[in-house]
Length: 623
Ligand code: ADP
Image 1 (cartoon, rainbow, N blue to C red):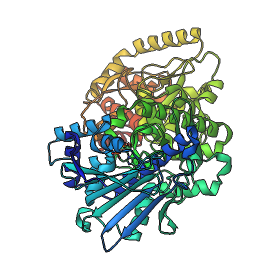
Image 2: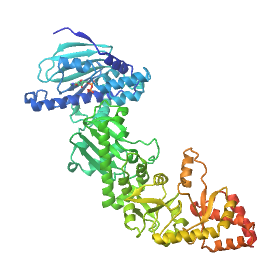
Image 3: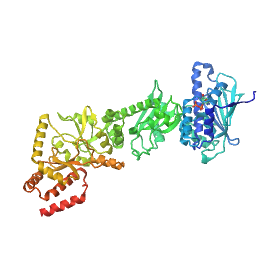
Image 4: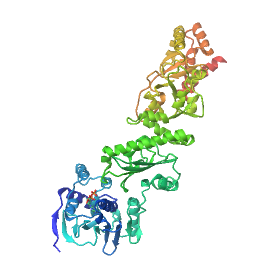
């Protein structure tokens, strides 16, 4: 036997070790995840080499990872039947850092300033073998490379140097012994000789590792990577149980979506559409994102980069085989593989929603009621496929109250010559359905889509088109319906009336000048006398309120008051005006017309005192 030789760690390793030893990171349990995952990788590698060198087969026995704890000696030992390492490999792998990820990690830490390392960083990053020094004062590793007959013993107390010497090991593989620090719950160091603790950690982080993790006779992990198994072999009950496990949702999911990506990139996913929206779907604090595994080893919860925000209700796991375990959230954001996986997952979810809408209408209605507003947020996202999202949109319609229609069905029902998809937004479906703005559309049998979610104000504002047809607000600008000739005639007739009554309209406008920018005649109304509309490019009042709620002050936008020229009340106003232009009643009537228009729009008048005063005056005079 040779005497132990002392070696210095590479500078970066020293930094990393220093970080581990002095780590404030509270979740020190992850060291076990790291060591188990190394062991599992080593077994993978051996199996791979066995294919080329069958003589290696059987040398290490059945693949497994054994844990052994010694309460008295305060040691925890991990023994694997993996490929092991030669002496050179030990020096290369456990004395230097080759991985780019670790270098980046160290730079991040350095720029963050020593001692100010955000504790989560360590856990998110995963720091492999060296994390053992978070819980151990000394680590001993005995390893024998498959195909070689001697072993190497490596030992370090994490203080900048390690020793190497020749050793014995009865079979290829690696044995790591941790000389544990005293348990210190306050600093996250638990008693890692306690079977209860070990069982719990393995269950949490390594349950799906493909090889048995044993503690004595007991196998701690289920080894079942449900996402790896072909759909036909997994029962619905198993899928649902797994859903419950990851989502803590007692209800069964609406749909289960297994995803397999093979070829240039290997990844498996198991996604779920929940049946019910979580209470905090619209809260920034919502727990969202997918669980990320790398080859069945748990890497992180709530990985947001795998699903865009408008699909944040999707639950599930992703197992990306080609990703490094040592990946931070910061790195994930830029990772090209993650981008590719995300794209595929989005495609799968969208295809599932398409299918649901096509083949399971009542399920889709349920889905839409729960998640429609969130999904519509995608119409505002720069990178979302808007056409596909528009295909999924459902809306109430002026012609079929109480039912929802898709845009495609709306287009199929469009009248000859109709060149736009008409819509109206408001605070509730009921309120919108009562709007006087719908009168002329109803009279002509032209359908108007009714939108009432706050997000609708935003995406519709961006003037989308569907199947080449623009979506046009009936509350903005002028409306022109009918054939080209009809429109021309109507416009001319209105223009003429407008001129004829110009003085009256101007007089009413003067009485309301604080509130409205214009009083004009309307082509929208058949039974009501007045309505409010917005100028072509002005924002809707609801949008204005939404912005105010967000703490922005968009400034007051004046509306346009439109009057129905064929209403008998308008004829009376004209008569009064013709007789006596300064008739004081005109001011009160102007106020009441505006109030009515507000009531029809929102059920409220913005200035109840002024409205009540005008009403009292008019009542007095009429008695
Ligand atoms: P990572 O596993 O992310 O590469 P580690 O610091 O955990 O980083 O390990 C460094 C390297 O040491 C591994 O890539 C592997 O080659 C080797 N190694 C670690 N543990 C084992 C083991 N149990 N058996 C064989 N090789 C191992």
